[in-house]
Amino acid sequence: MDRPLRLLVGVLVPILALMVANWFDADVLRATQESVQRTFSSADIGAFGDQLTLAHLLTAACAIAIAVAAWRARSVWLSAVYVIVGAFIVGLPLIEYNFVNSIPQPVRGFVIDRWLDSVRGLTGSVLTVGAAMVVCGVAVIVSIVLVGRRTSNEPGNLPVPTAPTPDGSAG
Image (tube, rainbow, N blue to C red):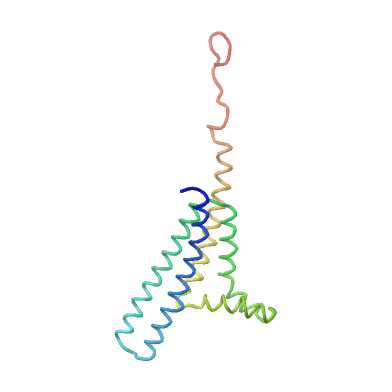
């Protein structure tokens, strides 16, 4: 796969992962939970348990997909975006609880409330996917920096001393 396509995949995968995690966690699970609360049916309770298990598996699959996309893209800039966006998502509850009164209402209404509605799912899968973005971004940046240092000091990149030949020249 060529580099522009890997970068495109690296951009689209986290967006899709966050959308899927949010949809399942905030919509599907919440609807099933409300159904259980209305009916107290054992079939609904069993379905809710099944969907809860599926939500955890889906969250793990989203995190793995993000890790693979980040690793395949191998871009410092894309990884920095992963870190910034993931940290924003993970930090939203902190922002809400500590700074909500100091944020102007138009900003709070548009950004904070809209994003907080997405992270308030039953399993917190959006927060987990955001944390995965931070970890993957940092891991890729560190690996790129370490590989850059290692390749400049590898034995294959240094001149190889040779033993002199019988006529006295280096051979």
